[in-house]
Image 1 (cartoon, protein in one colour):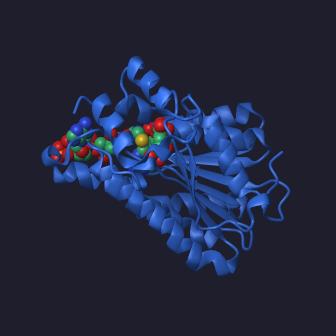
Image 2 (cartoon, rainbow, N blue to C red):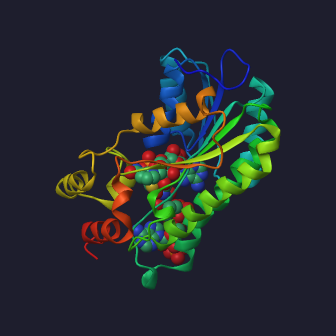
Length: 269
Ligand code: NAP
Ligand code: COA
């Protein structure tokens, strides 16, 4: 059972980008653990569908639509949510965009789009939730990526953005630590049945090859990432802040060139 690090009976969790893939898995996991869960993303249809799924699990659930690139829309959504539910115990910041493209051919707008969603968007989310976090005891978890520390061909925009995301984690852990707010990053490895994998390893044989390059010899599941988030949000992790935790079956241990080469091969680059 999820043990909240704050004093509330029922922790309040907001998952930004929580309407598909890994983040949706995190939202569903917290709902099954007894939390009340809100999700946010651009598409109102995806928000409404996810809220219905969360409620079908018996959870109290809410949601709002906002593009994380729009600071005001994010702040409005958070203020409305907290006006209704009160302070937040756990915030997952996981909205992201990705496409494979070599830097030499990528438009400046393509690079900007990813940096604005992943990095500036995370800043908007963290700044919007800061006044609404329960003190002490609140926990913020950013969903980063191996690209944050491993250079990968075709991923210059994501590498630059996610490196920034992890530095935001470390910096805000220092700034907010004295108030009892913890900030950590989780680095998922290659996760099965996700948009991210579909974009970077579009066919089954490539995905199998990637699975075989993982020391634990399998692709990850959204549930693996949820369990790491549940731990980081729990009282068991109450002395952990500013950490960047790989949850990847050991995939990133191979280092930049091996992981980068595998990706380049999968992209035919
Ligand atoms: P996904 O299914 O595409 O999920 C992305 C989520 O973010 C969706 O809910 C999407 O909903 C939302 N989103 C995208 N752009 C947004 C924006 N501008 N404003 C607000 N919300 C936005 O992706 P995923 O593959 O599961 O990846 C989820 C996270 O895990 C990302 O942070 C990614 O970098 C990280 N990650 C993934 C993998 C992997 O194997 N898949 C590996 C390492 C790290 P809307 O379309 O409604 O906006
Ligand atoms: N290769 C090269 N450039 C690309 C591209 C690709 N596959 N896909 C998009 N771009 C460029 C576009 O050409 C555009 O640049 P331009 O104006 O110079 O032509 C720029 O990126 C923005 O594209 P647009 O479609 O207008 O952006 P958007 O804000 O609607 O969407 C994306 C953002 C591009 C990141 C989109 O893929 C997205 O919404 N992704 C969310 C889901 C996702 O990526 N999931 C995986 C997470 S790991």
